[in-house]
Length: 137
Image 1: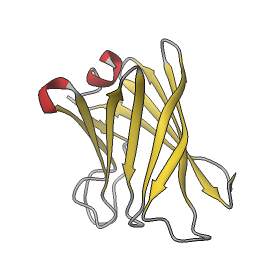
Image 2: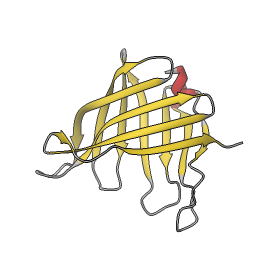
Image 3: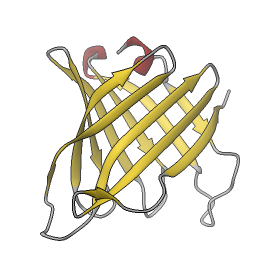
């Protein structure tokens, strides 16, 4: 979890959003150091939030999606640089609707890559959405 807390700060893809908002994420440590909150595309209409926290020995990520669903993922593997989260469950999900269901974080110093997997009918749908970012400041 320390590696997640160490992400605190602003990360940018280097590309500009059409509305001028940050095309990247902001990580913030909160709740007495027990949670890391990631705000994706802060200020944009499609702003989303991810909350990372420990549940016993498990690390959980809840993705508060612009679709209005909240998929929860659990850390399924990690090494020094890569953390992989797999789907657990999803709140507010309508039958037949898709949702995010997998996340891979690759942390390499001041470079961060996020790979998001979209799930439809219980299977990955399409290629992962990839964000490559560098730390600002």
